[in-house]
Length: 71
Image 1 (spheres, rainbow, N blue to C red):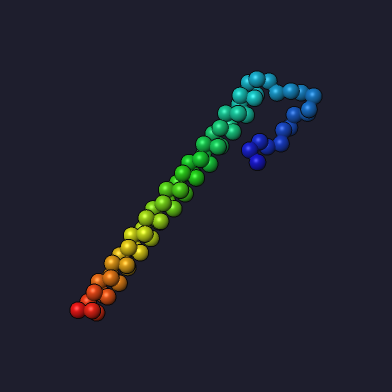
Image 2: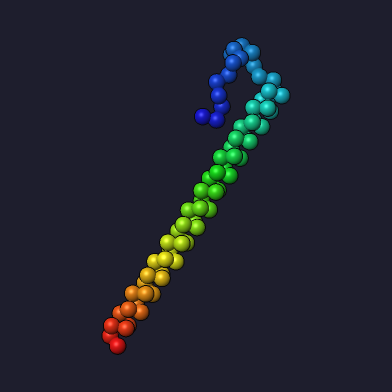
């Protein structure tokens, strides 16, 4: 998935410059994907924190209601 098909025949090996160019391109592509993953992780953590806060608030409200019912 990272490296595309080569247009060169098997008998013509890549030069060092070509290898460096391909590796640099792959590094850039991987960096973009890494940043996407980091953004997804951050968004999921924010959602998780919001859900936990909402659940804690609901639990507090239920405890307050139960306390008021017994009074």
